[in-house]
Image (cartoon, rainbow, N blue to C red; front, side):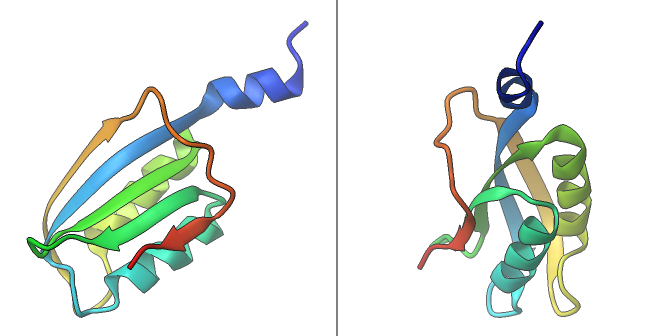
Length: 101
């Protein structure tokens, strides 16, 4: 029999997500933070110097897929042009979801 702790760890995934478009100066990081916390995800969000937004999100697959759909939409004044993500095989254990400055 597999313990719940081991099963939970197996089901958790971490995604490295890059969002391009008009995603800075429009409340995008706050939007990301809100939905990450609503979906019980952990990780980080930050602006990149090239105008994109970088997200690392850790959680259950179903919640991550919902999160990606939200990120594609973005807040009202954002215009997401591209979204790319890869699964990280070796990722940090985050305690919460935070904005990096």
